Length: 74
Image (cartoon, rainbow, N blue to C red; front, top):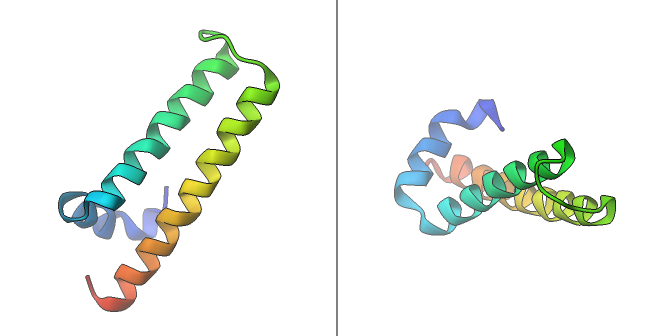
């Protein structure tokens, strides 16, 4: 996710608790979606769709935080 911000992501994960929580939640959702799509965890298509929407919303938030941090030279 966001390879152009790899270094900044590492820095923010070490210093920004809000960013870290969002990043971790995004990863949790990614694993949850993968498990449900693979059938290793139960879930309806509607539930998977909701999880994907939540994951996308978090990704959008992360991107905004990355852009702000990059612009401020963080």
